[in-house]
Image (spheres, one colour):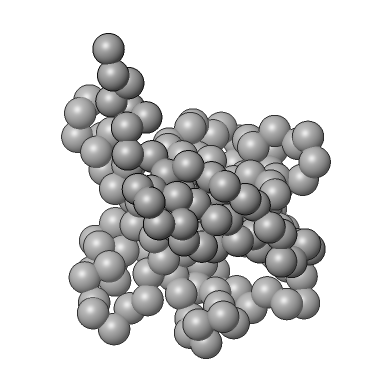
Length: 185
């Protein structure tokens, strides 16, 4: 009996690292059919965690962050790399506090987000938190340029509908999963 799940999957002939650092860049030689071709892969080397939050008034805690690679301000949710053997849940709480100054008492797993699986292995564990409270000022790194915003659900939906808004896939995905989970209850 044929294994239909493996049928058509390219064979990896060679893996060559062209850069090692914060991210690794690898060029694989793969073969599908008779012709080998190169496939570039970005390896993140660490999982990430993020949190979609609402404050005690039910407003969504959104960040507007300048993203240097694209030269634009993007709307997103707080998040970052999981450090070492740190659990994703702890990383999400830590990133929320660092980037916004808000504390999440309870986090619920929402989804696993793979933003660009065609070129990277990046996986982001996304959590949801209600009733976050501001307990300090943000403590972001000098390379991060972040503005914290509190938006009612209608305001957030309106922002997503604006064609001129730059909304990253993490915010879109997290909000989608939240709304779907609410509607299925």
